[in-house]
Image: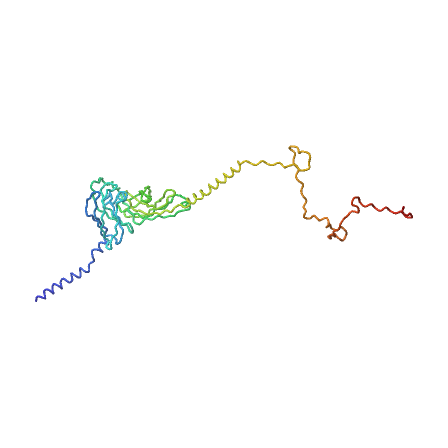
Length: 372
């Protein structure tokens, strides 16, 4: 009889155990919920540290932890990341369940309180959460009045459209178009909103320019917005384009700008051409100013007894006839008929008398003998 009550109790407890095993665990449920942040202390002084604990984040996600001023969990960081102590921030990666725990040093932000611990994703889809923190000794000022009317929110990731040109390769200002989709999450119509587009190079603060979008957005409506972005001439390196509306940073987009190699090529050619041109000019000047040697006067021809008067022109030398076709004296062409083109044999022309020419023979008279 004693075993029967025990069996009955076991049978009644067994369905409850099966139901508990069928329920999902708290870890995955927290990972799929809304990101949340809690602090180990709601107030701390400068130089101390607090422990930041988070739940409901995506697994294996890199997060940034910052102490920011001029912010509340309801309105977010009004001044953007410029009102945060960026130099003393910390990074943490969530575990498989989307949880994390990280010690964060407490420092005074550049903007007055109210202050929060701002946690946001550094990679992947954007997510953020804030927790109130009172920094002891830091000044407190009221938040700026919120703009009446509708509130705009970026619904899609921003992108930079466009590409460089040949002029950009030679130092022209790089330009792109910031494209994004914005929606009106307020209760009033937003007409011709004025956005602020900032460009920051490296770790420097962004420089803001106002860009007005012409159009009207009713409550719950969305539209595609395109805003021009332009850098200074010769800009190159890693830049960050930020979008702000109503004093709140809505999105940030990285932009890698290539080096204008055409300018480098121009300076290289200039360093080669200018020295060469200066060298040519210098050689021409030296050739013009150097002293010329005095011209020598021709000496008088030998055998002339008279002196040439001054101012008289010297007769040019007589041209020497070419000797290529001259014939030797003992090779004379035959001038007789039928002998053209033949050469005579060499012979010796000796006079009959070495002192006087040969006397002709006197003619003989017919019928008369020579005298004795």
